Image (tube, rainbow over all chains, first blue to last red; front, side, top):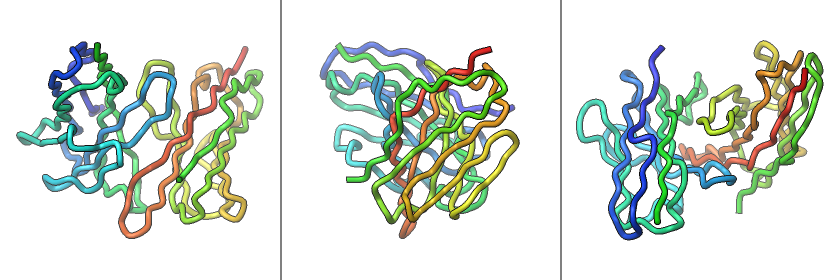
Length: 118
Length: 113
C-alpha cells in the first residue's frame, strides 16, 4: 500500500540553525500539507501546497518557514532559524483530491519527524 | 478565535461496548468535520468526515453532526482493545475555498478486555 514517508525520523539541532524536513508524498497525490504537534498539544495546520505553490498557510507559518517541491517526488519544509519553541513533531500529509472537495478527502499522514531544538 | 473542545478523558469502556466521543466547536461558519485516530507516538489517521446534519455510518463508526448545537460526535460500536487511542476532532470553516482545519486536543479512549 502506498504511503507517505518522512526523513529524518528524528532531528536534533541548535537554536538558530536551519533545518530541512523531507517528505515523499504518495506518488499520484496532488495536494500536500505540513502540520506540527508540540508534545502533548493539538495538531496544528501549517501550510497546504498545490501546483507548485502555497494554497494556504496558518498564522504559525511565518517568514522563518518555507516549503518547496524541488523535484517530482520530494516536498520539503525549511525552518530558517530554529527557536526552542519549534521543537515538535512535524507531519507531512498528502491527498489526491482538494481538501475542500466533498469527495473522499482522505489525507494520508506520514510518520512524522521529531524535531528537538536545543 | 476558532476553538474546538474535547474532553481529554480518558474514557474507559469495556470491550464490546459503545464508546461515545464528543466535540464542540465555536465557529458557527464551520462546514467540514473530521475525526482522526492517533495512536501514541504515531501520526493521525482519518476515520470519518461529515458535512451535513445527521448521522453518517461507516462500519463500526458513526459520526453525528448537529450544527445548531455546534457539536459533532463519534460513536464506536463493539469497541475493541485495538480502538484504544486518542481521537482527534477537527473542524474546517471551508468557505471561499479555505481549508485550515482546527484540531481539538483529543480524547483518550481506553477499551479494556
